[in-house]
Image (cartoon, rainbow, N blue to C red; front, side, top):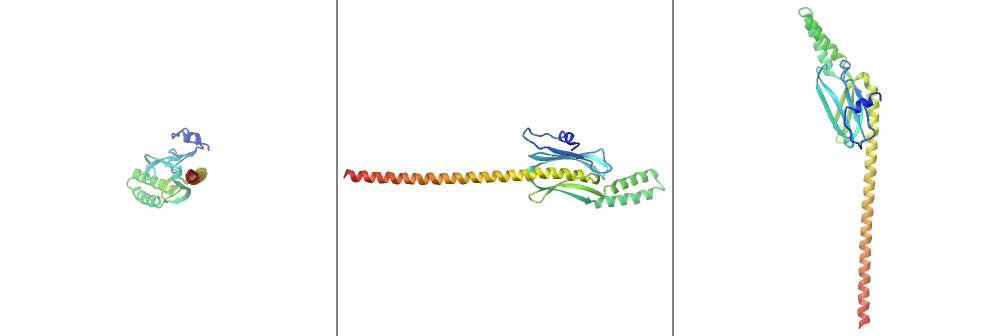
Length: 209
């Protein structure tokens, strides 16, 4: 991806982590200069997303790290944000009402309304764990296609990790079965040896008589 190198530089990866993929997205149409960074490796997924107030005021960021084996699926969806629509209507009506008495306040409120209206629709990336819980990232609806591409890349890592885990479990089970068979064979051999020794002792006693 075009921003993969910049994205992966936002996070720290261990030397053994491979197949690193990542990208950066705008959290909304209005806040195009802010970026949500997402990166994944063969061991974990990391993301950093900005927090905002009323959809336009930046308030720090949220950083999360999720072990890859805790992820059951990676899903994308288009979300309708009812809260943004309601706030947009509220700001619009109040702003229009203020235009006759306080033009500056009215303009600010109308701008807030527009900011909320353009964020009514957005794209979302969900990391779903085995219990059904989700870690979600919301980005601009204009970047849905890129978000889906990254989701597919991360899903491949998840499937590969599951396949590796199943292979390891199968190998461990085979080793346990082999060890159990070897132990059973050793016990049988010891029993045969004890029987032979007992028979030899009986024969020696009979010969001594």
